[in-house]
Image (cartoon, rainbow, N blue to C red; front, side, top):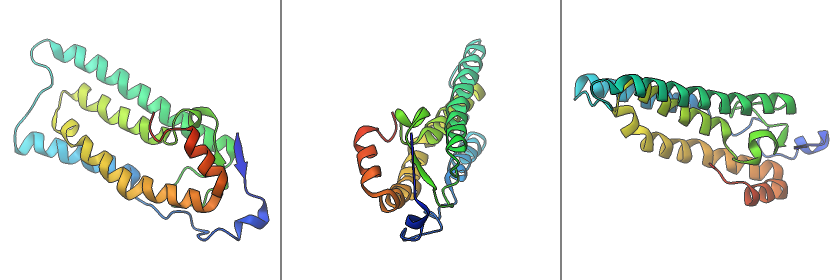
Length: 169
């Protein structure tokens, strides 16, 4: 279910430019690349030793593909609702169906699973050690601003949705 704005309501939104956030994928990419840099510069910390690498690779790629699927489901749900998936553009509706029935942030849940899966598949620990910092930055710099924007743009509809659906899972 998507709650669309009547055309006249778009003008009443404080920011016609969306929450103006430009960093979500960069947060995940930066955290992962810094982790890989630490693997090379500080110390290599493998998750599995010996023959466990094959299990780690299979498990990791399975998690990564699952994460990609969750993100893609979120993107396709936004496309079907004809609203933007980019957090720097204004939303045309409040999407509450598809994966948005289970989490307010399925694209971020999917990106997190992909991040974890690739780290496990590569058998590297540093990116995983940095993941809490990545998620803190995402929550602080991105999600907080997105939620302020959505509360402002959709008012009581968003407040009701927020009470019904958890941020993550």
